[in-house]
Picture: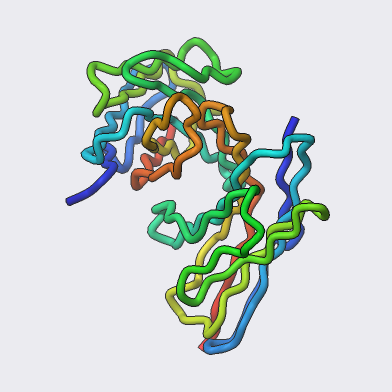
Length: 116
Length: 115
């Protein structure tokens, strides 16, 4: 009965490779997010999508591209991986109330990406 | 730009005792939301408690309560009757109303509960 799930939980890959992380939520929420947690545990938003439309796009390299096939899924594709991309990536979702998006965000278990 | 500051990188508490984690934030907004999230060693981010800025009453959830001081821009978390399972990183977070879900986190406080 996992509310927000991510796959894989661990991802180890070589520099220069392209990889994807998948996220699914079964909460019926309208908005989904990607966050990056660095080695010092600092969490920062990367993207948010509402009903498959990109809403927030922070200053993230364009090697990172979110893709939302439907409102229950938000996948993160990363091209040409670099050492500095090593981090934990969290997916989250929230209910959209009239565009205010002030509702609580529920997080997935995270994906630890290690770039060698 | 809004910022969230957690001034205690690490804290420890004896089991069954009470501990308070500090959080201050900087904003010129009047309508916003504040959250505490817990991240145990399992890495999962778990919502602990949420406070709407327009509510004067402090939020409580079982053993967890907040002291929300809007004028001072302070939002501390009190954990009563600490349990070993409370050992985790605790993150304070701020969201401006209408910000389209842009949740801004503090750097976290690592709490250790000792038996």
